[in-house]
Length: 295
Image 1 (spheres, rainbow, N blue to C red):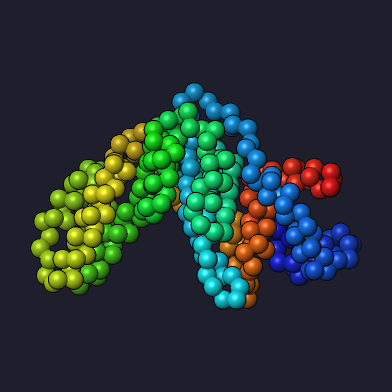
Image 2: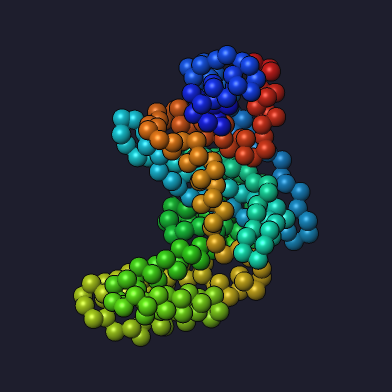
């Protein structure tokens, strides 16, 4: 109950549904008392998910901000791993991922990388069938290149398109012209590739010094990520090109529980809840139950 909702609401829910009289402090103490054992569970490597022939595994990493005490925002880093067969097409525009493994860490990226390795090391032998889709954070790509040099790296398409939008906001004054250019360039990214878009940007004559700086910034960003932006090839192979799955995970893993009105967390308190949340959402709650029985 403590990982599902705030402690006060959890206490009320338990009394209404189960007839168990408790209070927020008792739930908090239970979460805190079991924190070391829960952290040990998160650190344990789980069995490799059974894969069909040539099946791919996706891994995504991202960060989201949480308000900590006394009044400081800190980044909670989140990782999500799922196999290709877990993706279900609900409609033409909507997919659902039914089984995933998660890990979360409120702290620096080096500590998070150690935790993320627990999820991804077992898939290292897949080589290019281990596919990382992420935004442009340098530490993420550095970690992937160091730990999984043979894996496929894809820069989130929508993040790449967002950079087009930022530049267009400086270059085009007319909103309609701006939007048309963004859509045309975004489609070009998918159909002809990043080099075609780079050439398109090069041909634009800067009107001000500010626009010139934004143009150079965009070209540098695309050039530095060139090997991760072969969207036509990814689409032909039937690969995902967006990191929406990790953005959705932020909402379900951290924001739903840890960003409620007025909440400010201690580092340990937030991490305890994050650990419980990732175990729950990774379908590992039976392990928590067994741990509690043995305590």
